[in-house]
Image (cartoon, rainbow over all chains, first blue to last red; front, top):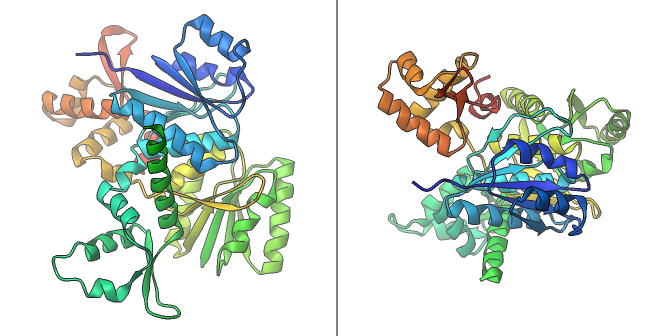
Length: 212
Length: 214
């Protein structure tokens, strides 16, 4: 059986020392450095990685775009997971936004989340299982294809075998939609969470399209 | 009561937009440590809450760099609020240390809470696409039983054979489940330092949080 490969994704700021505990403790065949600074080829980080012979790449992110950063990390993680790699995400280094983006990506893909204090103490590992599993593919597709809001009368007019009412019930249980009985006809509208999920899916699709 | 939760660091501004934008909020629960600048930011939030007539509670996070302890404190507070019949409108994760923010994200995913980040420069709120991830539901009953057994006996790590004996299960059944759990990084097989032929099944402290075993 072929050996399973390990990817280590590490967030990185100005301190090279922040990625060292992860590099030393977590198995890796390849590293992805997630950063919002420009890395000099002759600087301490790149020099260290070259000297140690560690296969690596740099993922540069916009420090002000949390969702966009999370998506780029998620895509990188998912690419490796699809090829059968085991992925660990070390959120110790860099600024908070990078760590939050990496945490979102880890939660979304079911990658293992790790962190280390800047000293020598090792934090517990958190084995996550994935938000991706919480939003099934059919619901994600429906969320994108449906025109929002949906008038309640349209739902009531559907026949017994129509999948729309059951889809909407599932979305209501997940707090993706809510019933708005305010001014005018009652409507099923996306909640803040529903809009955030829709935005995420659309941006992910755009991202996939732009790389093809 | 409608509550909003928030991690707080040195800037009150990271939490104030949520206080302003959440309709009918009655209560704010702030998670912060004892750093003088964090307490100063807390005083600022208290001032705004007092004017708005909103009740404020503070939950102290003794070690703002300990992800697991911070997540446990936050999850416990969420469960306490829900038990008391309070509705949690949103969890603002923008303030505090990196580890506090990451802990809040984990708790939002585990408890299915709406979460929001506040942009560093524009102070605009950004809702995050998190859904409820119930780790205990994603595992089969057999896997949960095995993990609970390992967790309860974590002081004495066991091999797969010992696990099977301890649980009164067939070795092949245990092997199958352990293999699945290992693939998902939930358990690790670690060489026994006293006998390198043996592999002990180990779990992380975080399992307690994930499975709600506490």
